[in-house]
Length: 153
Image (tube, rainbow, N blue to C red; front, top):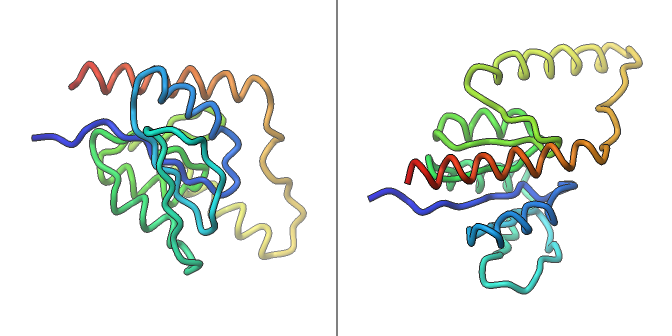
């Protein structure tokens, strides 16, 4: 028997928690909010909070260990995305960009290049500021993922 549909949010600094809750309420899907410190969540039977210890990557470890084929993981962390994809989870970045098994390699490579440039003292910009269009794209991508997983049943 397959596991039920579940959404996990890598919640530290996640700008789309409220949008995730809206989609989850509409589709009646449980959401687990995972963070290193207590985060405020709505009082709702579908929303659960897991506060992990402050060990480096403890939240990532929790999400990766619980991700499965019927889960959707919301994260901006490329390395966590890779781990969740290996568990056959659906992974979506906060700007609405899905991580896929086909795209994760180039995302990891780009991350490594940027890290090397920063380590070498090069002034490289960070990610573009979060826009209203990112929020809209995220909502659309999340809703599409939920509908697809529900159909696959």
